[in-house]
Length: 102
Image (cartoon, rainbow, N blue to C red; front, side, top):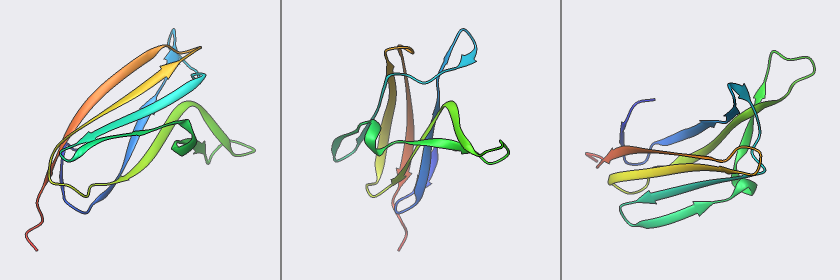
């Protein structure tokens, strides 16, 4: 995933969770996003589990989650995926949103 975007882009934040190398679903998943204008937290209700299109029948991929986000503020953003219960973990990343030239 690239780390620099233009204001107004819509991107997909993704996370993979595992236990001892095996994909697993946490009991609770939280995605926290901090952008230049403040902090927003999205709980598990707003997070979609990825779908395996090749599986028969199609279904969620264990441990794989995503959230669409519109980058509406220029500056440095940070985001953090958290898992609790079966998969206790956290991962933080950052990205930069440059202003639009228009």
